[in-house]
Length: 446
Image (cartoon, rainbow, N blue to C red; front, side, top):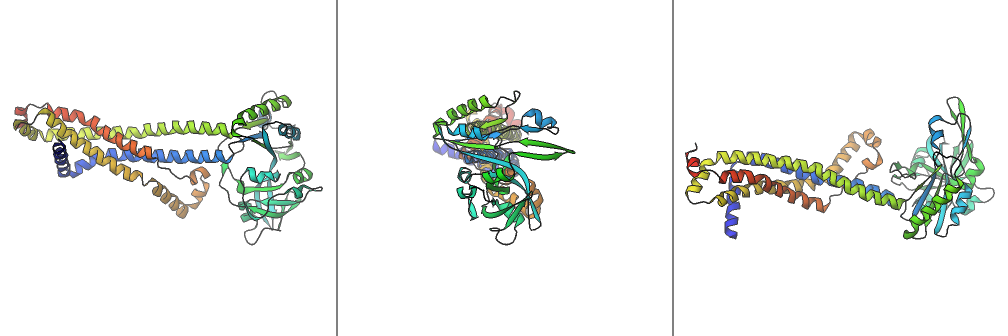
């Protein structure tokens, strides 16, 4: 039995090698299909991994509450009036009293321009407390971060700057001890943070946020120097915003109490923030829920990619069937001779089916080989773009520029098995057609 199977496959291989170009063309569709499945799933897994890592960086036990400007003031502008909205210091005190809250970190942020030694940088100007560094997993490169002593009365004019801000304002030399100016105030640099990859935004979207462009000062200093009210000029008129806190990051005591804590916070804020009836002036983001949603999206994304790549495999199978039908017509006399010498219909079916399976299996193996080169190929493309088109590379969103494909083992196995199944399915018709030939008519075929 084993000898018979081996002999059949050996004859099949011999037949395929006799027509190398035709066999190569027949395998091409399967090869492309298998490669496409592995590459698309790898890219999808890479994108999904990045999204999940960004969500995890927000902290699985964290709840992020952010001030949001009400919709009616976003579209039409405030027209010279001062809009009072968002989180307050009283909200912070109330949240701290919730039993399931381990800690809460307030923050106030403003878009500004920093100046020093004739250089400028557009920055995110943040008033923070010392706990901000730990909760956002920041690392110090030089000097130190904000400490409690910096918030003494009167608070110190000190600042910690992000890595990109340090590069722009102080390209040469040590920035520690240097002075930067924001508006008309000066701040002494006491530390710089290490470069950190862009992460998910604090508003719940997955748009990247660049921590390297941040400048941190004590929250008390920001309140003393700038205050809660900020005026901006817009088309000849002044618009103002009165915001006490831009964000409060809450850490629940344990993973199980995250959702319960978020619900209590929602009830608490709804009770004291009811002056804007149309839309609330705050948003609550629970990274734990985002993580669940991301995993569901990942599954749906992978299924969609596999379906798209599966179309290539079906097209490849149709190509094999066409080639095999042409082969059956070309080898009609050979079939007639085999039948005249005693070969049964079953033997003819097995012979042609074996050739089809060999075609799809070899095409599948070559496709797996090309699929495994996904990582080096993407790295090569990124290197080439960085080398020859650095502007294009810089303009790409961080999530795309830093994309690393992850080849999933299941996609390799599934793509290969599907390619073999496609070969069997599309090889049945040519094999049956060959087996049903009348031996006498086949022998008369020229």
